[in-house]
Image 1: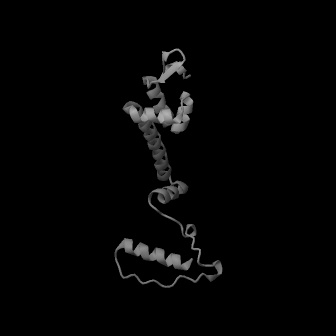
Image 2: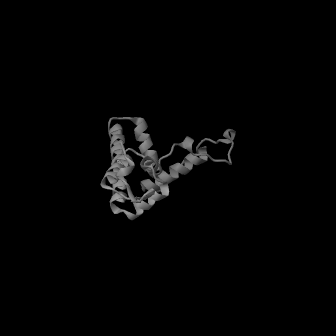
Image 3: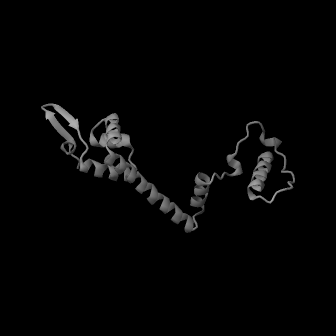
Length: 147
């Protein structure tokens, strides 16, 4: 378990200065890799959040350790998500497309100025473009009018 002596230097009796130690750097990387927020890491070390942020700002090794820890977890979770998609998990696929590709379902689009009963069936649409992006925009506009 973590001991206060792992990162406190006693300058004079009753006075402590917080120092960043190799163990604190290692533990910060591990905790960040578990998804712990910096506020919670500060509490774990028994120091204030502002003090911990100050140490991160001033100490390159600590800053890099926290970033690497977080990046490691993000990478692991992203890899798991991609594996779920490759395994055919439709929910994972939809989540990915919504969060990374800007996809939305027509039900996700809300228009305040129309009542449910006033919906008109979609009108015929003639496309005058072979550009898939322009065609997608036209289709989206058609779907919005049909809501």
